[in-house]
Length: 328
Image 1 (cartoon, rainbow, N blue to C red):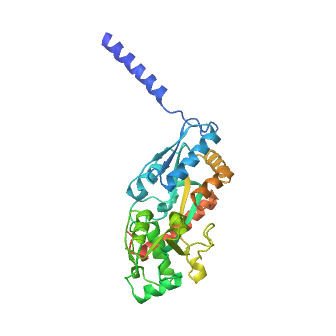
Image 2: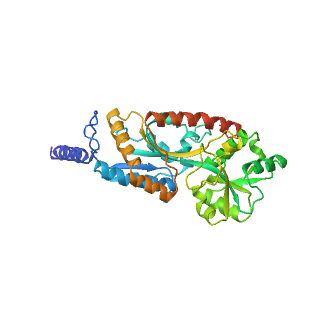
Image 3: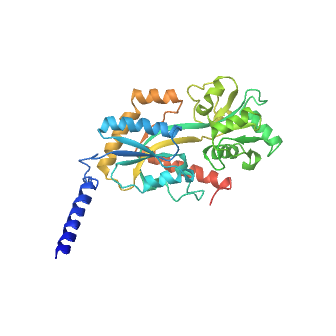
């Protein structure tokens, strides 16, 4: 009898402890949101551009919503680990994902099954156009010169910027297709990112780099490198001397993007609160200053406009992935 009472008391105390420690439940109408700490999942390593943008928004959300907001870096799988964590998070608005360009390409390459339809899009916060960058002593004065060199010696021009199948590899592949070239007409030399690629370019080991102008800003400003062309609708602010590929008659735009999302089925009132709060932050002077200091492209799309953009990105990149031979 004594043992039974003791076990009953233990079970009761355990239930009380679990109840006390359980996170509070969000009201279905979102009236009490947020009722605990918020988290922004960053799919990439600390210190990188996506991490810096994530931490800016975490700080601003904390001020706006009055709840501590932290950034957790969930890296691995070419971005798949972090994006998956965002999709499978509890759909109550307390966990946000700083999604990136790779969400538009991972499923087409067999890296992940995730698409933008697995989330509620909140706000696109950034977009950086791909650019073709060469050494300042390069014989190519224009993107047209580069195209002619590739045609004259297919497979001889070496280019880099990221891993095989990464954002900048796909950007240059799409550019080549739009210019009437085969994807294999350029030899892509894979690296771990734009920084080591720029080192390879400066050392004369490759002929060109495809990455954003912001990533090569210091070398361009010092006169070591120059941009041949940028894959954007318009010239990039701060790099006004770099023409677009459209100015050379090539109809191609390639943007690396970042945007905030939450898990599918997050209650509509919570989604609305987050969208409105994030839009206010993205349109603030503080954010504009932050973006200018970091040389990031400022591009904001809210809700349905962001969703339409993601759908268009899916369509654009699946064609490139297939043509480049990366489809799985």
